[in-house]
Length: 105
Image (cartoon, rainbow, N blue to C red; front, side, top):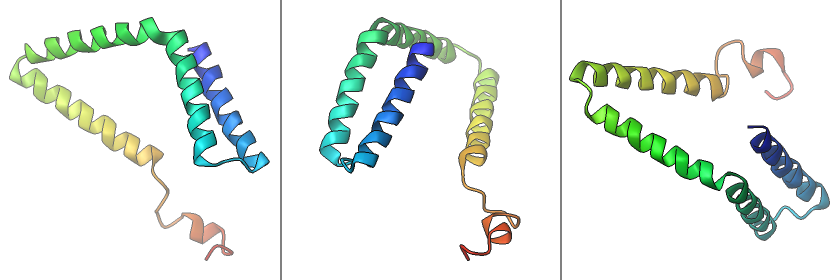
């Protein structure tokens, strides 16, 4: 996980650096992304295939579950999606941006 965090940090700072230099154009971003995806596959290649096997076994397990367990898993997945949407979405309530910052109005 540390390697992944460092790689994502390097990618974000590289994009920031391209923006500061005025080179934030699609060819430069695409080249940087391809380079870092290549590094990612070099570092985590065998783990990606292991994750694929784990996901396949989870799906096979889910197929053989009872109807009630499938229903509970679907409810759990829906709850996770709803919570992530609320947590990662923009604030739109009454006490949001317009109340505290009058200049953007």
